[in-house]
Structure formats: structure tokens, C-alpha cells
Length: 75
Image (tube, rainbow, N blue to C red; front, side):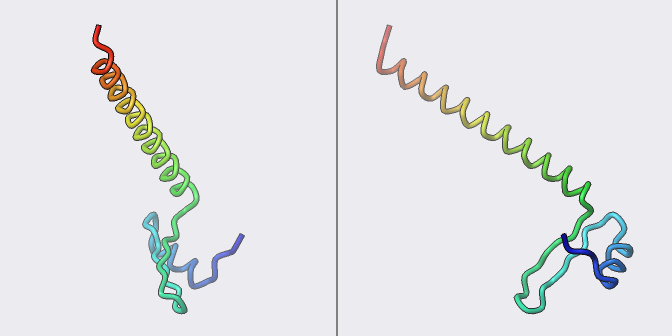
């Protein structure tokens, strides 16, 4: 694990509960530094949303398959 530099620690303290945006001067890539507990909550919420979308997609696929089967196999 990497530890905070004094410069990053000051930025985190100044930001309070807000994320800190960091830019790599060599690559110009941007990163966002957030507290671990905030990241964990965000990750859990995203995973729950993804699970819900997957369930909805499977349900839709099941309805479509039943509909197609009913069209091909009239009673």
C-alpha cells in the first residue's frame, strides 16, 4: 500500500469529505482520492445496481423466450 505524502495529506484535510482530484504530470491521467469507507459504500451500491440490471435483463429474456415459444407452439 502507498502512503500519503505531506502534500496529499494537506489536500485531503482541506477537502474534508469531498474527493481529491490528482493529476499525474507525466501522463496527464487524472485520479480521484476518496476515503476507503466512502469507496466501499460506492462500490457496494454499484454492485447492487449491476445485480439489479442483470436480474432485469434475465427476466426480460425469459419473458421474450416464453413469448416466442408460445407463438411457435399454439395451444
